Length: 265
Image (tube, rainbow, N blue to C red):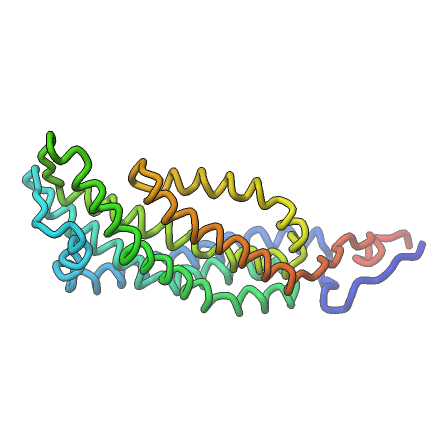
């Protein structure tokens, strides 16, 4: 019985059955360790943010142009901790993302690991770029529209709790949406998607982007929806371009039983 041996760097040194049995417990232990690190990072970030919660509130409510109200006796305390946790999550994000990447990295080829770790700075950069776009471009337009909509017959008094929820939802999802080029680039690098294939699905991509924009957009007017759609479409085609440049066929992992020492003796 003959078979093509896999590259040396992909050949396991242990019996695959024993390795699988050991690996399950090892993975669970590693998952527990990384979750603890994530929780600690979030806790530290939240504690730091508690010192600046009032300034953060002043910053995120600036587009409204007036003081927001609280209608419950505990609303201000809830908002205080909600803002602190959200800001703490931003502070802890580099650690959270790294722990996630480090957990899934052992299941990748060496070149895939390198590509994933090289993308980490870009992940943070694009998320913050998306958050800045949402805060400085999208939200002022959306808030202005919402404040004037039916303004002649309805007096609007917004609560701080609902506005903070509204703000964090928009900023978070726009930040995540800005990760699209890097996600596509990584998938292309490991051979899952290619530039021609993605380009062939551009119509379907625009439909999906339209649906996502409708979900993310806080208003029903076409102006705000277009503000979300146009950058997402640009980001998609930027990802397609990166896929053309970075695509690499995925190497097979179908090794024979003999390669693992399980063949007939």
